[in-house]
Length: 137
Length: 187
View 1 (tube, rainbow over the protein chains, first blue to last red):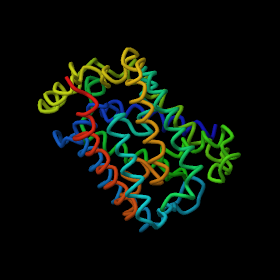
View 2 (cartoon, helix red, strand yellow):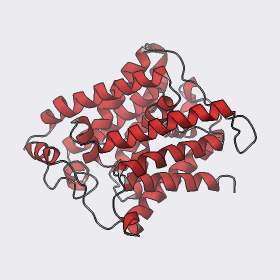
View 3 (cartoon, each protein chain N blue to C red):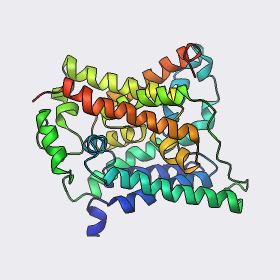
């Protein structure tokens, strides 16, 4: 039962991302061409509201469902890993037209060739895990 | 009901994404879809090959349930919440795609030129999907997050590393869209 709420959140997430067209390869291409406000509107409004909400959570010391103070873990310090890793991710994002969330959602919409992208993404994560000690972070 | 079935405008979708992030915070969790890739590696026994995958993946079960829900959400939307609208792309985008040999842009969610089995079942088509997936999976773990973890929740929490990661997302995305895609696809 505890896990049911996550199933519902996931379903809601899937519905929103398909209805917003954020799962569309075409919308990602259009975004990187700066030819429409659509994707910038989605991400921009989500972040703007998110900044306000997170500030309020901290200010008011809001608690989670389990009663503990909501604690959003800060990202580890670093620069190279974020710039380099981010750029590698960006290359893949613009080619596949999908980031990890949409990849799964698109399988649900019936695009089964996306399973190849997911398997390759798991492989990419595996290779990172194996060679990470040798990479600059 | 019509509003539900039509594509949703950005000012509805964006705030709903914030709401999803806040729900996960309220449940004491985080909003990060790419973590599942690491969890799947760990479940598959990758801990034998690297410490990075030696963790209690069962504690991450909730996130895999989110994935199952997301797949169901995609299914529900195309089956019950769609009116068959095409994607209202900018005319510049449609024209630019024509020069790459992409016709009927926006009539489906994804271009058949990349994702149809006809396209996939060739060396070039298969390589595109495999390379794209590999870059996403490798890059997201190297950067410690993807669009949900960095662009949405990291920026919401005013994290400088997330800003650097998002700048990286754009460096890679712009390189691919403006310089590499035209090399891969020609009309």
